[in-house]
Image (cartoon, rainbow, N blue to C red; front, side, top):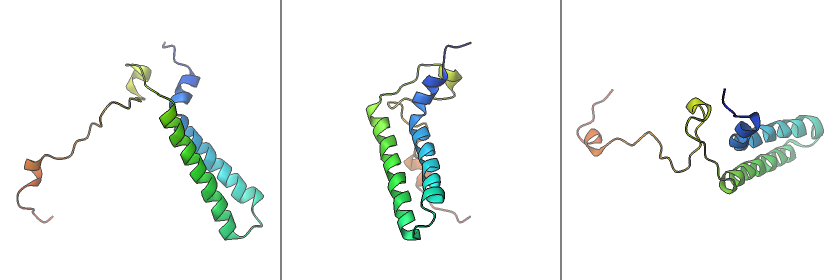
Length: 102
């Protein structure tokens, strides 16, 4: 059994956690507290809270350097900012030539 704790996984998934918790806060504010308010004002507050939470998640990603060790959770979760994406654009030989209609 590996020595990976739930707190380690939470630290790696913190941006997603921030956005999910903010969505719950927006629902609570909109449906609970601001029920009698005008619709336009409710949307403005919801957009403000949502935008703020996205900025906090982006700030977390840029300030906290995260990297996973090889074999972390058997490769289920990989956080490596230096790793290029595995999908590459098609080469020019594949895109050149006549196009056939589908």
